Amino acid sequence: MKRFFLYQFFNSEVSVSSLKTVQMLRLQLLLFLLIAISANTVFGQQETGKLYKIDRYKSIYLPLGKISFADKVVAFNVGDPPPIQKYRDSTQCLHEPNYKNYQTPNFTSLGCGGSLVVEFTDNGFMNLPGDDLYIFEVGPSTESATIEISQNGIDWIYAGTIAGGKSALDLSKEGIDTESVFYFLRITDLKDLCRSKSAGADIDAIGAINSVIKLTIDADVLFDVAKYELKESAIEKLISVTASIKKVAKATILIEGHTDSDGNDALNMKLSKNRSTAVKDKLVEILGEDSLYEFEIKAYGETKPRVPNDTDANKQQNRRVEITVLPPKDYYENLLKK
Ligand SMILES: [Ca+2]
Ligand SMILES: [Ca+2]
View (cartoon, rainbow, N blue to C red):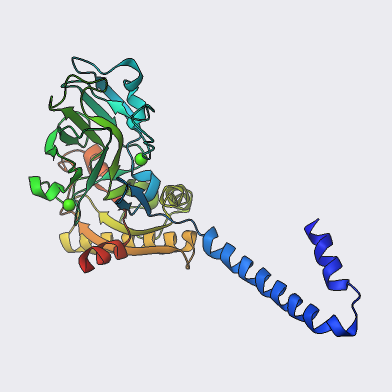
């Protein structure tokens, strides 16, 4: 239909007097088509970071967009008294926020003193510059709750309290290190409001501002002993790794190389550096030169073992390349400008 119209337009017979107008129109149409095409290529580029509404006036920017949110409910211990049935669906606290109004049960009410454990499955979170977590608490009143975090779902660390509309947490305030990646979060209601249809804190979403994707690759899969040329079988592994990286269109990718304790310290340092570089070069090749990823390399040699280098199995665990997909550098640069 569209094509037919264009054909008609470009081939229409016209009188000399209206020729000028038609030429103008043709030019305008061509311009319009050109703009439409270039707009497509710009907007076709998937944008990673996203603004989420907090209230009527404010929004918060999550630099890794929709992957930033908690993905899975691990446990829900509803408080006492509990909220009414329609506010008790624990899965309503997952994924992107979608609160409409108090009547629509698009959130989870914890009940008085209730607690909820969620897991991040396609991302983790860390203590990086600025606020690290944001809890989307909704409903007519903001109730306070404590937040604890965990790397494994077993050992928990206190991470702060949300209260009085303060829903952002900076993990550095609790002295949490800047290396650990966390995958679990527990939120426990502090019994502010127990006599309500939606007793306990009302959670619409749990977002990681400093969201990361962490991938650890066994170095034996990538390299032969003491070598830094990628093995044939490594390519397939790195292609599967890029599938995870591509969940975000723009990011800083940190590649860290580690060895076991066999051999000379300085040589191990050099080896881990060469190996990280080889992984970086291959990832650049697979992801494409013009992609929006920035790379950083860190070599640790044998200085940061995961486990003691006392058995062959442990040594194998220590020989590894860690890839962390972090919020893009310009996100932090913008934070500094504020
Ligand atoms: Ca997620
Ligand atoms: Ca922080």
